[in-house]
Image (cartoon, rainbow, N blue to C red; front, side, top):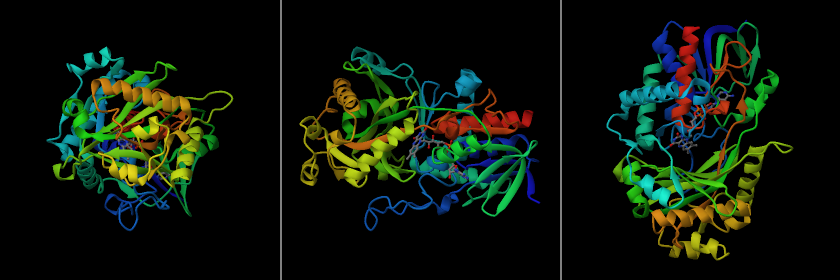
Amino acid sequence: MSRKVDIAIIGAGPGGIFAAYELMKKDPSKKVVVFDSGYALEKRHCPIDGKKIKSCISCKVCSIMNGFGGAGAFSDGKYNITNDFGGTLYQYIGREEATNLMYYVDEINMSHGGEGTTLYSTAGTSLKKVCMQNKLQLLEASVRHLGTDKNYVVLQHLYDELKDLVEFRFETKVDRVEDLAPGYRLTFGEESLECDTCIISVGRSGSKWMETICNDLNIQTMSNRVDIGVRVEIPAEIFSHITDELYEGKIVYRTEKFEDLVRTFCMNPKGIVVNENTNGIITVNGHSFEDDSRKTNNTNFALLVSKHFSEPFKDSNGYGESIARLSNMLGGGVIVQRFGDLVRGRRSTNKRIEESTVQPTLNATPGDLSLVLPKRILDGIIEMIYALDKIAPGTANDDTLLYGVEVKFYNMSVALDEHLETNHKGLYVIGDGSGVTHSLSHASASGVYVARKIVEA
Ligand SMILES: Cc1cc2nc3c(=O)[nH]c(=O)nc-3n(C[C@H](O)[C@H](O)[C@H](O)COP(=O)(O)OP(=O)(O)OC[C@H]3O[C@@H](n4cnc5c(N)ncnc54)[C@H](O)[C@@H]3O)c2cc1C
C-alpha cells in the first residue's frame, strides 16, 4: 500500500514554493509533500566555469532549470507586477485579484531577504511619450528587481521556513499521475504515494511530461505561441536613461514591412548574457546582479517576435526548437554577430569580435544569424533596432552584439476552470507548466491562488 498525504505538489519552482508557503500559512495541519526532479538549492551548480568547461555539457538534470527555485533560481529575479505581460492569469481570476496576489508575493519576498531592493514603475515616466513619438509603445508595469544574488537569498529563507513544515523530495521525478477518483496516485521510480489533492507546477522544463500526463488523463490542451529572436548587448550607457529610471522597459514596435510586433524582453542593465538549456537545446538568455561588484559594462535585452501556428501545423514549440537546433548545428551552441556584420551580409569572425568596442560577456561562436533566423523575423529585428536607435542613439552601432537564438517556449495551454482546476476534481495545474503564466510573479501568484482555493474548499 502506498503512503497517503493530503496534498502533493509536483515541482519546486516559484509556483510550487508559493503554493506550499500559502498552504502552510492557511492550514499548517495539512500534510504536504513537494517533489522536484532537480536538486536542493545548495546542491544546484552549473558545471560551466568559463575555464575548463566553457559551454553546456547537457547534464542529465540541468541545475539551471531544475531544483528548489525552479527556472527562477539563478534568474535576474525581476518580478513584474502587471497584467500586460508575463501571463494571462487575469483571464482566469480577474485583473484585480491577479494584481493583489502579485503584490502579496512581493511582500513575502521583501520579508524573506528582499528588503532594500527597488520597485521601479512606468507610472508618470516621460519615456512613454518619447516612445510614442517614435512608433514605439512602452508597456505599463511595476518591476521589483531582486537581482540574481538577492533572489537566491530569498529562496534560501523560504526554504528554511518551509523545510520543517513540508516534506521535500528532491532528485525525485514523478513519472505518472493516476486518478483514483477520489484522490491521486503518483509513481516515481519503484515507489508511489497517494494524495487527496495534487498540484502540478512543472514549468517549462516539464512541458513534454505535462503533455503526456494530459494525454493519459484526457485533459484538453491548446497550442501556444513561441517567441523567437536575439539577445542584444550594448554598452550600458546607451540605455542608461531607460534602465536607471525603469530598470526594464518593455517596449513594443510594429514593423513597417510586415506589421509584425517585435518587443524587448528581459532587460539586464550591466548584466551578463548566459546560455540556457531547454531539453538539450542551447539558447541564450541574460541576467544581472544587485551587487555592484558583479556588474559589467554592458546591458543586454532580448528582441522577440511571436509566432503562433494553429492548422494544419500546430507545433509552435517544435518550430522554435528547429530554429534553435539550426543555430546549435552551425555554432555548436549560441552564435554571436556584430550588428554591422549582419547588415553587411557577412559573418562575424573571432577577429571582428575581438576588435569590437563591445566586449561580449558570453563566450559564443562568431557566425551569421541570417543563416539561422527566418527572413521575416530577422527583418523585424533589424527594423526594431533602428527604431530603438531613435530613443537610445547608439543601439544601431556596428559593434552592437546580437546573440542567437533566443527562444521563449510556452507550454501548451492546459484546459482549466476559474480555480485553475482540471476536469479531474482536486487536480490543479499552475505556473508555466499550465501555459497560463510565463513569469516569476504570475507563476508565484498562481500558487498562492490555488492554495487558498484548496483550503477554502
Ligand atoms: C535564465 C532565466 C532567467 C529568467 N529570468 C526571469 C525574470 O527575471 N523574471 C521573470 O519573471 N521570469 C524569469 N524567467 C522565467 C521564470 O523563471 C519562470 O517563469 C518561472 O520560474 C516559472 O515558475 P514555475 O514554478 O511555473 O516553473 P519552474 O520554475 O520551471 O519550476 C518547475 C520545477 O518543476 C520540476 N519538475 C518538472 N517536471 C517534474 C517532474 N515530472 N517531477 C518532479 N519535478 C518536476 C523542475 O525540476 C522545476 O524545478 C527566467 C527563466 C530563466 C531560465
